[in-house]
Amino acid sequence: MSAETIYRPAPIPEKASKKVTIQTFLRKYRKGGPGTKYEFNKGVIEKTGVVAWRELFIIVNITNHFEGSPSAHKGRMAKDMEVWTSPDQWRKPDLAFISIEQTRAAKQGYEPVPEFVIEVISPNDQINCVKNKVYEYFNAGVKVLWHIFPEQQVVEVYRSPENLVVCSGNKPCSAEPVVEGFVMPAAEVFKPV
Image (cartoon, rainbow, N blue to C red; front, side):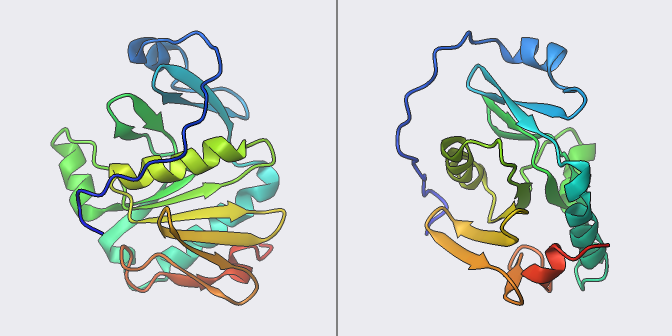
């Protein structure tokens, strides 16, 4: 696919809700609250869950595996990174790979989009919102997206909205080509610590 490719999700009727400005969102909702984080989607505030304590081991497993990978010196895994996917859409993925180059760009005032993003899907997440964010992330420049389903112990690895590999058991989940050498079996993602 070319760099100009725009992925379009199926249209979903918007709920009737009061829209707010991005300034209001950033002032009142940016920090979230206990067990809650908020995202901004074209004037609508979307309440999403944070990774629950009972699922924190997933973040630990991925982070530990990354730190032992050949690409660990090329960047870091950041939790709840603030990401502008468009001028009117602001997300907080559960984990995102931030390269050294992106860190340098951020120091200069830029807010680059991570090329590898991980979302832990909670039982409260609505499927239409989850799927729409797949398109949103890829339109913003994400190249690899993992959706992790703790209850089913499944990882969905996207390389585009149409290119999906489902991983469970010993099937490897890969972040390549974004994070060279970062491959781990799905079972390791869910291994108790």
